[in-house]
Length: 198
Ligand SMILES: N[C@@H](CCC(=O)N[C@@H](CS)C(=O)NCC(=O)O)C(=O)O
Image 1: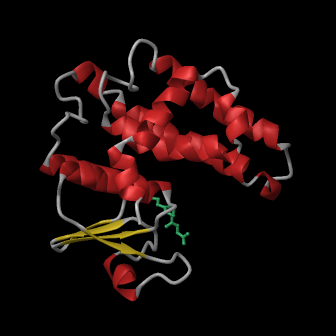
Image 2: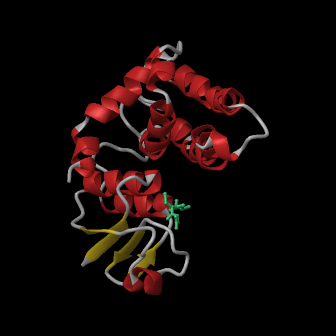
């Protein structure tokens, strides 16, 4: 019996849910309120963050670990890039860059009024460096590290989506056409629409 404590708008929860759905592992999804986290979730993990997976008694409370757990069960389209070890080694650093650096810029851009030290454009410009890098990775292929999605694409996508949605008109007028198409491909995918469906 597997249970995922999730929050619909959380990008970490989104990526965990996409990996679980892709793997086909059966999971009950419990939507929580971040303002009133259920006691049973806090008893499993004292961190108090979503997502939390209870996989038959094993508790996993980091989204990336949940994704890796799902792929270890079943990875039909080789998201781990086992067929291309040279690309596979790029997965972890790319996700780390997203989670440790881009996420910080995203927060400052999204909530610029809370960081009055700099105008919003400065925070957006800092994040844009990463967007440009991703756009370059997409040269000649539809996904960041291969011609098909990998763990990196799915781990980053909810964050790129948030960044793009802070100001859609701005994102649409950037020169990052390949990244725009990449994002749109995910937004239209059964995988994404499936986890976002109520
Ligand atoms: N490193 C964690 C981060 C998870 C995280 O920060 N989740 C946020 C929501 S998006 C959260 O639960 N924050 C606690 C709160 O808002 O009370 C992971 O990857 O799972």
